[in-house]
Image 1 (cartoon, rainbow, N blue to C red):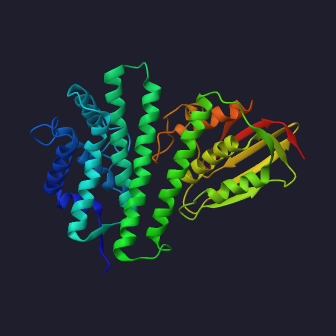
Image 2: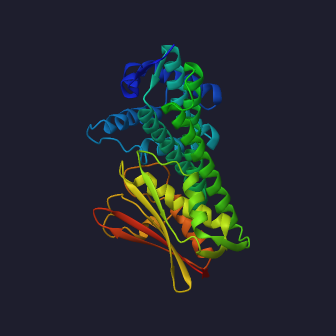
Image 3: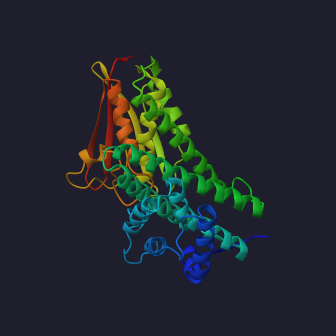
Amino acid sequence: MSQKTVSLREFMLKNRKELEGVCFRKMKEKAPERVEEHFPEEVRTVIDEIIRALGREKGLPESSPLPGKSAAAAERGRRRKQLGSTIEKLSYDFGSISDAVGEIGRRAGVSFDASDYQVFNVSVDAAIAAAIEAYWNAAHGDANHAAAERLGFLAHELRNALSSAQMAFATLKRNQMGVNSRTGDVLERGLSRLESLNNQALLAVKLNAGLKLERTRVQVSSLLQDIDDAAFPQRDISVIIDADDALEIEADEGLLTSAIGNLLQNALKFTRRGGTVLLRARKRGDAVVIEVEDECGGLPAGKQDELFRPFVQKGQNRQGLGLGLAITREAVEAHGGELTVQDLPGKGCIFAVKLLGAST
């Protein structure tokens, strides 16, 4: 029997008291020795912020820090540290919001719109990331701040992708829907995101460990085609590849695939609905230049350099903390190359990777 699809925002408002009760019960089950006597005010505030974030997607006035950083979530992180709790249990404080919504929704026999659920998951994960960062800073100051931010990025991005995939799988199983349905697409994108995050983590480990590059002759057009095949364009976005089949470059194929793949995923994320992303390669002297041109609408004035700093984001889409561009630059520079960005005001931007060692 098909389930009724309802507004997640209205569902949370209607079931607010029960939501807090189930959430608190799940928190106590996970950490009975450290949970306060009453439902934590910081978690209650985050629920308010999530509800407002859901409303904002529907055109209501912007009145919540989520899905950006939440002061309430950060305060919860500091409080958990004072209570002597762990980061794992801190993450569960906000993860219990997701679990509670799922439990109450199952009992009510309803499902939620995929776009609502995506905003909800991004908001929950942003709260987790803010709480983890505050917890770590309270414990260690700024000494290992970058490491904590990377951990927070991976924790909240992995949970976001996993939650989306789990939600889609549960819906498919309950409703006996086909994998070619819209819900099947959500599952496919979630699994693809998990794979992408895993690749980013492995790439970061390789770069930080200083491992030697395994250079081979790489056919550029074939590399770009493989990257495009592994991507999952959304919102009717088209990808056009323009590269000479004879063009080759000496590079670490795995490292270069991850770097260009990050740029393509970033372009797909920010390009307008129905837009086009251009993936092209040219020989310029003894170098190969690979460009990814999107239709994001252009960059904020004077913000080009900030894009390559870890955990800095461009735009309102908060799927990730901006780690991908920083890792991409590290991978390009490990090849002795250069990563630049060109703003196309009112249209988009072009990320260009320049590598020496071209041949045709």
